[in-house]
Image 1: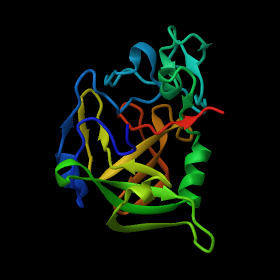
Image 2: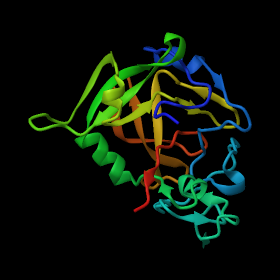
Image 3: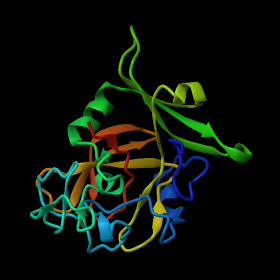
Image 4: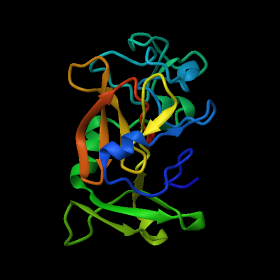
Length: 223
């Protein structure tokens, strides 16, 4: 419903990565918004370390497959078991962002670390990214500030939603960082996916993480 929503959110902020790692949030079987790379259909909600897409250099944005090697493409949403989970879940209306799209967003956007005040005066932290105005420049501002509804209406907010670790429903690093999947694996790896990493130290568009770890997704509209 809102840009900052995710299941069982971490309110507040971790400055220390070790503190954030030791702080766990559990997701229920039917409340999962951190996904293994390249899963959809019957595998969409898996947290198994053995189920993920694992073929190098296959861009899965807007595509679905019946196998984890991304060899057998399908257009049947009922048959799909691997591929673009955003495309599958929205019946083709949205897709995973491509790597060059998240890279360009990181390089050309104006990023502001901040927080949104929700019920009971609780805070959800993350980055608001907007297009630099006339006379402004692309940059990352790591001093935190309260973000207004007007500011949020003009940009994209990515919460520090953390990352789920393999073979567990536990989300770590929530309140410290956010890790957003792209649609392709990292370089020549078969189990390491490209993603956009954000935390209190900055924005890293050239990041990657284990395909078995549950990452967040911020889909884009299919045009």
